[in-house]
Length: 252
Image (cartoon, rainbow, N blue to C red; front, side, top):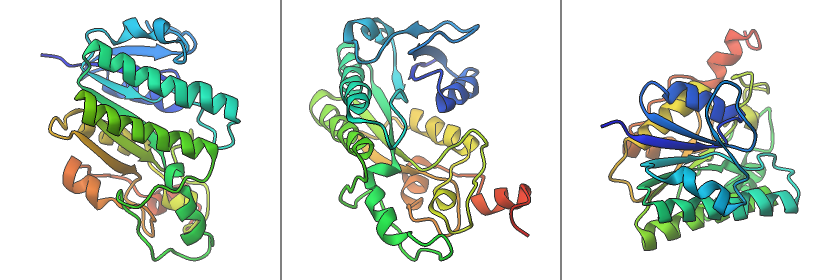
């Protein structure tokens, strides 16, 4: 039986790629703030609960990508989209009997470690942080992602949802790192191909009640742990930032 998957933020940079990549495997529902040309979607603001609630009916898994994505997002936007909107998504999923929510968290939920351990773009870090470190947000945006993770844990423990939080490193429109080899944006880079693979592994992970994984490619000198995702999800990234920099002529 084909699984039905709802993608929020389906018109964003990541959402657009994910829906195209998953269309051949799943029955997709799309939720977006604006219409998507040539594609059927529910158009609604995730902060409006009654407007989004019908989109969750009959859904097996939700990939929650919709958010104010900029780390500099002001509090009003963070509150509207990342706090109220994320609560609405989890609550709508609960009411509709959805089995699983995959929440797009962020490296900024632990971004203070980056500031402490990876401050010199010319020097590799010797530290690795895993999913067990205390949260250390570096911004109000990061705080909102910590909120989403905590909310997910609550809905997993008390409402029976299966929740996976992905602390996404850095995905960009160029699908390539832009900094120096040891710069934080290079070491935490994740290719779109690897992110889609990670989401596919999450969708098939039917025994995980709650967990947190870092969304990065197989980059040398990375700050964020990959072994947990490899062992638990079966995540096998195919790309790494240094090879991509060489491909683009940025390294000899």
